[in-house]
Structure formats: C-alpha cells, structure tokens
Image (tube, rainbow, N blue to C red; front, side):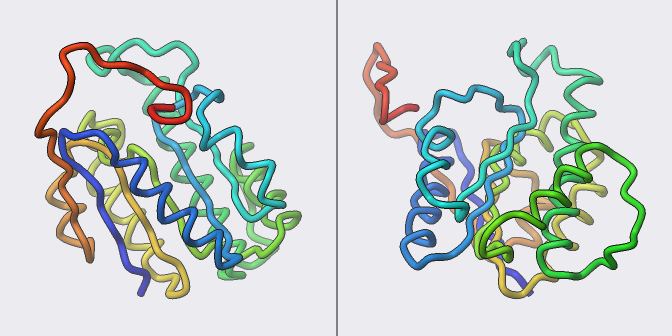
Length: 200
C-alpha cells in the first residue's frame, strides 16, 4: 500500500516540507501531483514553476478566490473540497488504469481529471501532495469518515507516496498515516516579513 506522510503543527514550513519532497522526486524524473485545498492564489513559486517541468509537475487548486477566514467557511467551500476529492480520485484511478474507461463521469471536475490523465506525460504519479487537507478536515468541510475512506482508497496505489499538510491533523488521519511529523514554532520575529521566493 502507498505510504502516507503527514506534516502538521503550528510552525511554518508544512507545505514547504512537502515541496522539498516534490523537488527530490522531480530530480529522479518522477511525476508529482499537488492538490491544494482552500488555496487559490496563483502567484506562489510552487504554482508558477509548473510550466518548467515538462508535464512532470502539476498543481490544482480548490479554494474560493476571496478568502473570508476559517470562521466564515460554508457551503461553497464544502463543495470545493468535495470537488477536490472527486478530482483526485478520478485522476489517480485513471492514471493507474484502475477504472474502466467506460465508467460514467458525472462532474466537470472528473472530466477535467480524465482529460488530464490522457494528455500528461509519465502518467502515474509517484508523489501526491494533498496540501491543507488537514485544515479542511479540521474545519469540517467534509465528514471525517468520507475523508478517511478517500485516503484509504488512495493508499491502494502501491507505487505512489501521499503527503498531507496543514495544521490540526485529525487523529483519524494520524491513525492511518505511516509518518506523522509535527512542526512547532519555537521563535519568530515580532514583525513577520513576506518574502517573495521564501514565504511564497
């Protein structure tokens, strides 16, 4: 079964750790897929760089364009999480030829995933990053049981490694993960800087 790594905790660098694994995987010519929950901004380095890897690195975002804060998340955000889950399942399943090509695809997101799998190079993802899935679960944007089943399905693909990032990793995720890494904030400046190429 696929191994699951979790990067969680209050400190900065959870997504950065995952992207470090992505760089390592790309260095070996492997396919990397990043699914970003709750994120929409397309000016980050990890988003802008995808065109430089000749189809080996793809990033897909499922977040509303206008961030309203965690306390105000609602039905639109729940739908985006559901779309991301469906998109990811279809993308991976089609990549590994685990589903029959004749299977009906009900949503536009799944159609997009199918087209992506047909056209991308090195179709089988070696690394799948589920960025901020922990936070989406913490905010109850999908039932925890459905999220666990989603991860269990992905674990069936033995040639793939899964990385989950975000604060507040639920115990249910930790129970099925193989590695859980907690990043703690020990020190930071009173005034935080947002440096291009470092924070984003």
